[in-house]
Length: 610
Image (cartoon, rainbow, N blue to C red; front, side, top):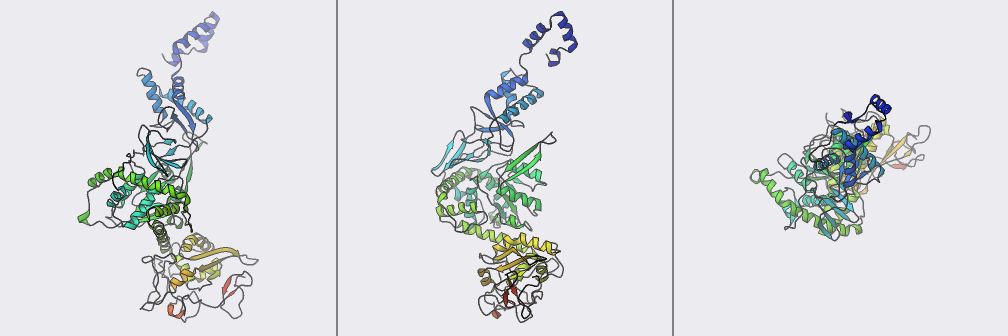
């Protein structure tokens, strides 16, 4: 009997009331109907599940006597479908109506809001000093790793959530040297393999930023397959490799539902995606309008493990480059190439042993990590501490390797920035005291290509902004940028002081090579912390660039030409007379702003702007 048939309309109620029969009919009707389906669903849910809200405002339910897995109230694999199954099993096969389920969900959302918020983790969680890894099985089994070792556990001590993108992890089994078996599946050298191993270990530590793993190599190096294997070790998925997202909303959806994911075959990184990747490394939250509402919002919070494959990702922003960890893959000769089905079998067979060896190493790292102290802290300092712990346990040098790859990534960024190359040239030719100038003077004095590249600043404001953005990358190659001073009134223009470190001056003032030019360091032969991204001087002098805006950077002091930085003269390191570069002119301190100036006229004691 439907609800409509059981209801007594107002006219019928009035007639029955006059006859004195309304109360009896109403009682009889209620007796026949019993509790509604929605009421039964709510009672069933509250008996078997605990409702709560996550800290980002999403309602969940977790089974009281089952796996410690949070089920969203809505969705295909959520509490709604579980309740429908329970109701059907308990009512002799009668399924609840969609309207009853919707009403029940509304009531349960209210119950969730009344409870204290909780944090459901995705794949990896922390429980005191131990790390918990969700194996993704239906019964909620997990592995816990601590300083005293690791063990398999039937129920997780922390709350996890699942997504449709997740697949189960195999149970780890000690079966020989799992790391050696992983090395056999990858075609990289020992140094990069050790660095990759340390990165994977760090990926099982949830509360720190992880650099973006970048597999780089030409076609035929197995980048995509290597990325699929590595992501599968950490967080197996039906789609471990993804194409670059088209917008921030699709990116947020992907990142929210996977602990680790890979963007495959990246050729160009849009500015918005570069920013999104940086935020996902350190922790991100994206606000979006809730479905079917006008003013309610949902928040997607995540910190993720990211990987990327590329031949050449093109120009990258400096902040993204500082968050990359690049692994170079070698070309696989045709005679050594293996079929993908064979690789799949070898990987599936090795996966449990690989996990066991990684967890053994992770346990050792957790034991020594509290006592690890860094004398120098790079940009990703938390990750660097993990590398130092791995080095202490294994006797490796992964921290040194990571610093070298970070320097290379920053140097690659500067290679693609003609204005940055021009600034490097200006500083390297300015002696130990460097230069102090305004943004407009900077535009006038840097070597300027005949045809300005697209990224070349069009005015002083843009020049100052671009210099500020490039400052971290320039600092990595030994060039300091200080913009804390201003000139005197009335203009009070910002002054930029650009100086090269002593190590960099020694590098750029190295003895002349047999052909008479300085021993410059390029992106192809860089490798020292103080080495900049410099190109060797050409035989025709120091003019910058061609139609594409490539800049030629100098590694020697000027010759006998007039000391005007706008003249692109070529020098010889032999003219310097010592290990340092010879300044263009005698430098004195400005009596107004206190910064050194290059004296170009007799008796000059202040900057032109002062």
